[in-house]
Image (spheres, rainbow, N blue to C red):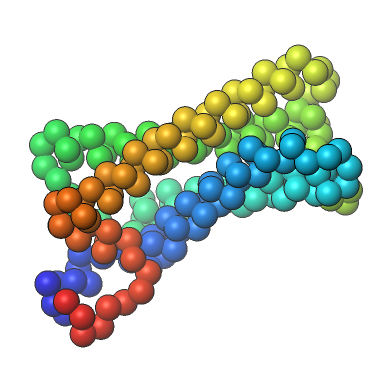
Length: 184
């Protein structure tokens, strides 16, 4: 593919940036979620959890922006696959959006139920009694949904790599940020 044909097969810049921003946020949030409780109790640990909550709200904004952009302005590309693979790809994308939505909503509920204090400056409005058992249940569901999201995202990533390196169909090119002017 050369020239306009290449550009026609790429998502628009906003879609690409929203995708990779979401990927980065999800990975950082998941890592923080895995390691923060291993840190000693104190201001540093509380600060790390504050970053987690703040990035969670940013992820909610990115997800809503992504959905709105995709529905209204984003470039629609022809499917990379047909038949069963097309159905699986579509189902995987919708599943990723749905699970990410669940993770975000559960995270907001978790922070709101406990009235989480961000950096000692602002508290997320508390709506619950703060009951330890309920807090634990909400947190467990948030963690489970986040882990499921990571598994589905890994499968999604592996499928993209298979397209690129097994089937050699240049699928990854659709989500590249860099323009390849004059390259094949």
